[in-house]
Length: 443
Image (cartoon, rainbow, N blue to C red; front, side, top):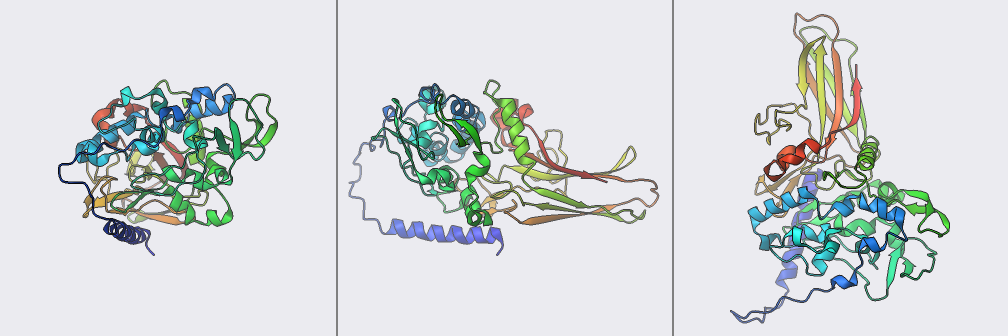
């Protein structure tokens, strides 16, 4: 079944489920004009500890987390730009906590980010984003976020939960092992989002769950929290099953003074260069006056979810093609306009100026028109599912008078998001946005 069609079917089923649930609710007993105080938040800031309190006993974990996108999640200027854009489109009331609930779960659960809040005024603990306690107080796995994320936290026992089966007693907190910390379910609440319209919009967990990797027992942690040999704390026993806490994916920190930026960039590049396989069929010769045929296959044979994944509607992975005869360039595709944007429909300078562009970027729609992630009712998926192959075929005219050698080059390139997505409010960040080369071949 076509994946885009399948997502639409899922969307309709989820919408029907939501309608059924709402239809079964009893009538609101509140009288017209009656004002009720908002419900008290389920937790207090005092229920959670700052990551700084963990640093002395877990210096390696703390250093890795400090340079991770988990620590960056709330202070991320790009997230702020996109939140402000959604507020302009929808209003702060309608957007609610849709973004903050995953970028700083503690903020939402403690009522620290009401409608119209200012990030600059947030409590330091809130600014830690996905901090240590945001993960290690979970005492059971959470479900997919159907509009709202759900977290199951134990703040009463004093326990910190993790995957180590025989934790060492200490005077700072009690410890307990829970099996789901070794499973992809631990990542589910923030990495599976179905919007209020019922559209599966950001579904990395579902992509994994529908892939062979789930049956093979390959978990998210195997790639994004690889194991190493070391000590969980100074003086603790040497273990060979400790997990990295830099949570490398494809998002990248752009703030000048963010910790461990060079290390983060190097690890992202390594991850991307071990994500897919690209094969190019080059002919040994071509007749002048005919077409040079290039067939490019991109195979997702190394990644446990779609490539790209997550916010696939801003991720950009594309093919760059160059064919030259000496100093003369005969053909290009996958290059930028003067703004640094690919020449698809979003190019302000040359919209759709690259008709052969092969771009693995999904599109969100509402009633058939471009939409945002909150209100979209359908998605055109262009990412590559696990073990799926996508083939691009090029027919490049060769002038009849040409002789000599043709040099053809193909590159698979990637960037986290395009310049046009942050130009309004974040133009100063665009020069810091890296472009990664995932694969390359030439003949």
